Image 1: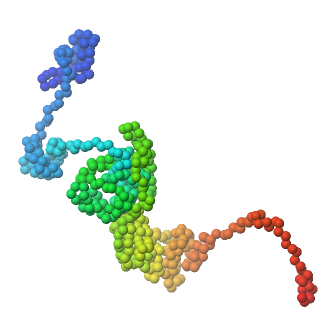
Image 2: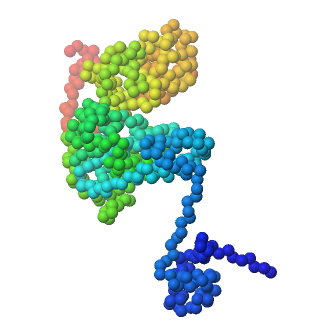
Image 3: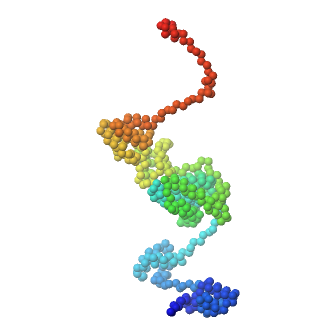
Length: 510
């Protein structure tokens, strides 16, 4: 039986290629164990010439790199380099279009890979400066984006990250949008959580804080943000344009928070519950991470807190004020959503104060409406108490009224409307008056009363009111009164004189 010969890898010069471990064994067996060369070759399965060459060598063999393969674009290399030098942001797709008359149509991956290699030659990798931060002197701020399931719906969230680089501690808070009020609330919440003010804060040139970039470090800030930071007071340094590495600690922190809390996608009832989850994870993380000096992040954070300046006695407001005019429906349009005001303020000028989670509408210096902030474009947020008076004056519009449709009334209310139309002359108005009871009672209690009124064949406002009165009224419970402290047991009462009563009973006259 013939035995197939083993193919031994050889270099271009015909020399046998061996592993570094084999090279070391040959040297050890010859110099230390004094094994003959031919016996070493038999034991290790190598050529005896390889053994002689290994023993006589004065240095370990070096790995020989394979020569680069020729590619179709090599003949156009200088032209591609010239394009990349003159236009650093030119795309590989555009370069392929320029070269197409000479090279024909090339695969997109081929061009991208070739251009990526040459781009690295034209644009040298950025070199960074290692920094050592003094405790309490600086914090960095940035926004990130991710996804969360809120109320069962996949929702895009914007989260702010604030870090103290000296102790490497992170603070994060999520929002449904990225606005000036979110930036101010995030900074305020972080400073309260840190327990003090650092010497300065570093931000990028976000348009919600910076209106115009001037020469050097000068910036034209928005009046809102300038007033906010002046109330703390807090010094702000802005990065150079397109130089995010100047706040590299928080850039890394955004990725860290995204990986810590948003992967896998978190689930929460609402944005407030999501923020509780975020802070809980970050607080637990303080003990899991450590600094190069060996301290935990929590220990370093507690030490840095002592270097922070005290917070102001009164925390600055984080609202963004907008002058508005309520339209004929009594709605104020703010940030692509509409909010209701009492009907008497329709067509009047008002001021809307926008917080990250709510909106307060004022007129004549008095708050007339407060709503939860909406993040849905085109949504109408209408309170029933704001429109119920108008509906009583115009009851025939009640069925199409947005405020009533938003209530999600059960079917019993619409059966009540049919029953009222059969028995009442002003049935629509009476039906609206029934809906008005929601201002004093819950929807469940009112629904039970409406069902009971329909079952008793006495549908009407008075019946429903009476049923609600009975269902909500409580029977007073008589409790014994302790009279021991009043000396009642020691009191004596004189017996009455009943002689006059006896005379009257006998028919006499007094």
